[in-house]
Image (cartoon, rainbow, N blue to C red; front, side):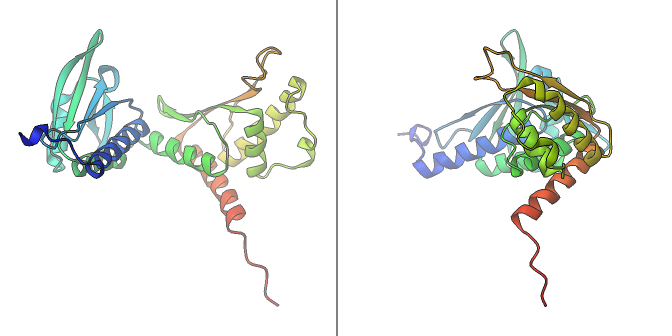
Length: 257
């Protein structure tokens, strides 16, 4: 039997799957959605990525790399120069085209993931840190993303808005006994959150109440839409939130007498 026909053992297959997951996460952190496929045969590329044409080109600018359409040659050259064993080709994808990247081994996949992460734009780096900080603050669902030179904060639920408000040092009295199911209180919470987030980010952040309708509130609670920030201000917000998380998880020791 040819080596190509012998399936990988469970450990080898899981290594490839883990490499695929790492690649997908890295590319998504850079704003690019990819489709991954893990091959089970030892003689085949470990992971194959398909990158749709609308966000598929690697463009170098000022030492950074950003993914934009149509650059198989640039991507191939960048990976080769970085010592990554992978082959790029253009393929048909639905009504358009895509780049298909065949990565030789899990080790090469890790190198490619690191290459993508090392070259995140300023906005994508700030958005990633802010998403991670929101998660550490136990804000369950966030829609933070980098887009068009800014970091868009997106929607938070009313419940998460209270968590964020408290984590950023908002006063307790205004939200004490707040009925989060009552749409009439959402305007107050929106105003409080807008002031608190703006102060933490050192920039004006818009906030708009999005009350749920009476028939859909069980499936979709009241929400607040927060606006966008420049990367530096998003980092300020992350700093403030991280300080709160640190204080909660690692409180200062009591003074010694």
